[in-house]
Image 1: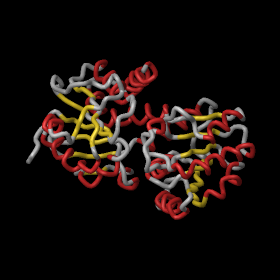
Image 2: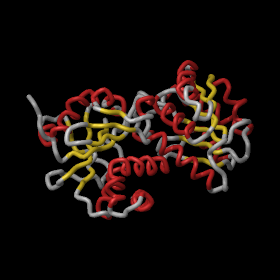
Image 3: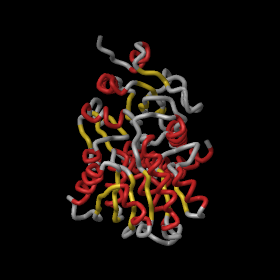
Image 4: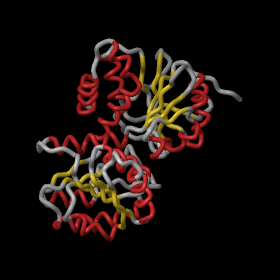
Length: 336
């Protein structure tokens, strides 16, 4: 059977409107146009809150409605999105970032090197393109923290812990922002692969690779630590817009936290995920009075970048700016 509309996917049980967040619209019937983020399981994301606030402010006819589906159905869902003329684009959550990649008509760099997209847009009525703003969103968050001190991210040394899609996205964005990275992972070959991607480009700050055993030494040398670790087992309170955390790595992060006494007093300790319970490393950093950064600013930044990718040209033609979008979406996210 060929499905031609999003409602048909819903009636077939392939797609459903997400139950969370509470502000997620409960119907699409009255929407002239849709953006529809895809996620594999319900979680209290702020995407509908942020995007719909911008739509209201700019009198745009779109509605952002988060939907839940099995990533195994990615090809079918994208085919229907091509056919349904209301669909304008939408985000890709955990599970869909990689699943949609092979079914897109175009993938913009650096998403192709990352091997994942977090935003899709319809180009010309039926063709779909993908991009990735996750790494850019995190890099902006870290840059904002250094800016508070009158400093820039360029030239800073960053210890990046992780070797999956999360780490890859962030590593590329940090390198393009001029940060020098030491990438470490339990499987050193994964860290080496990410470093090789970065070092192929002369215009990116260089990166080195190694194992978790190097963390104590590196903590004395770096300006920031980023925990960007993927997980195969979803937990509601460990959702990250980039990926999920391997439970087995928890001990490594506990050890990293114990070594923070060796770090510079000015170091920033960061986790890219949103949690109800901070990582041991962040708890230890807070106990020592070190500056910490969670995933909230990144969520806002990557959402702003994604929105502007879809609508920036049209908004600029009517005199609206990216700064306006940023202010509206941040206010909505903070009020939620």
